[in-house]
Amino acid sequence: MATNLRAGFSASLKVSTTSTAAGSEIGSVRNYTLTNDEAMADATSFDSSGWTERLPVKRDWSLTCEALWLTTGATKQQDELRGALTGGTRKYFTIGASTADQLFAGWGYVGQFTLSGDVNDVALHNFSIQGDGALTES
Image 1: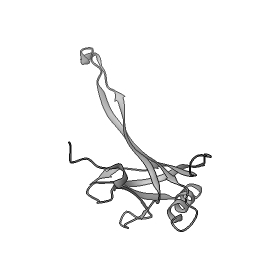
Image 2: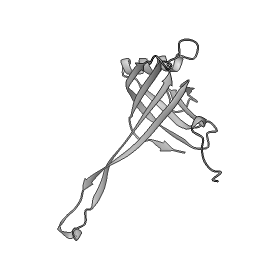
Image 3: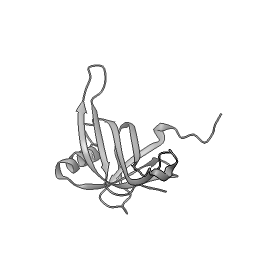
Image 4: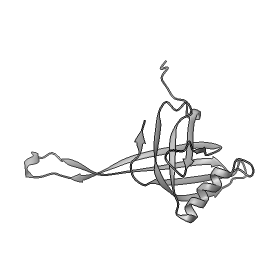
């Protein structure tokens, strides 16, 4: 069995107003998806011998997370994310293992939040963050 696996529950998502601050953890996250894309331009020519050739031209990243909708105490970060959307405020996000042995970080804007509920589940607070600049890995 592989021993170098990372458990999903060991992740930490943090938000900050500066890239030097430690950041506040977004509480009660159930799942998240970090996506890093690279758009390609078609660079095929008559010299390509019938093969498609591509040239990377633009990179983009986004983050979505599903969290429990908190009602007291630890709602500060959820409130901060909603406020960032309505205020158009850029935030610094870090995503990684809680042991901080591998981190992804970058500036971004909250592009969407949704609140949802189901009679058989807890109420959920979902966020979508659009990257603004590079996503770094350390």
